[in-house]
Length: 311
Image 1 (cartoon, rainbow, N blue to C red):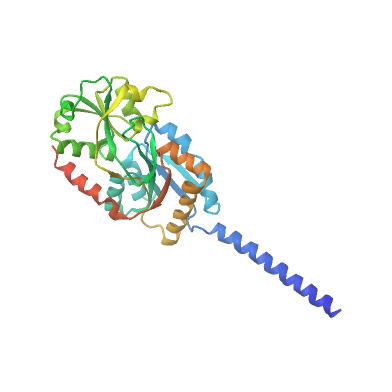
Image 2 (cartoon, rainbow, N blue to C red):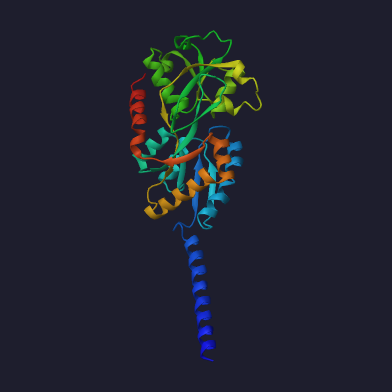
């Protein structure tokens, strides 16, 4: 009788303990972040409507890693929109290139959570292929038609150039500053035509709308599917200095606890999840994310100052 009582008590305690473990685990999963929802915004590297469709699945993937907290993903019209949205706390996480990040940091105290990694582009081949080396920086390039009479950077004088917005590192800042070092002031001596998306920069050259384009290396891959001979019909005129890779940044006011939870979730989705990795690659040609710090972007601050001096 005593044995039966002891056995019954033991089973009851075990069941209670097990129930406690399950409840605790569920609670832990649901409290990975204290935030009631997470708003994420991308900046367009290609046509915004296409990016919207590609990035939407991240809502479900991130929500799962954050214990079910609702995640809302959107694509902004431009870099400044994301910065201002983070400043007003409408956006919690912004996928910011270096220059917009620096502005957001200076103006609103935005911090970098992670920095992207890509496979380095094999410039020697000139076909947009990658090496097997992961890097946290890249270069911008000036692309022209293969049969163009533009053979030297000095030939850009008087020519039309497709550029991105004035806060774009690869599509504006770095090419302009580096060309000035080579004696070419494209702000003064060329016609700059603003387009939205690096794919549109490539297409403007292919279609003959502009003589050249400032794009990230190698944005021609963005249009290769529908323009299989893009690498035969265009060529790189020159490359810029190295540019720090893009950030995933967090707005001011998000707790340290939530920052760490967000960082962990983003790493899992971008580095380990098959679907997540594909989304990051399709949207930004990212291969993953790594830790970062604000000082990584001091070079960008230097280029911003140099750009201000070019008139």
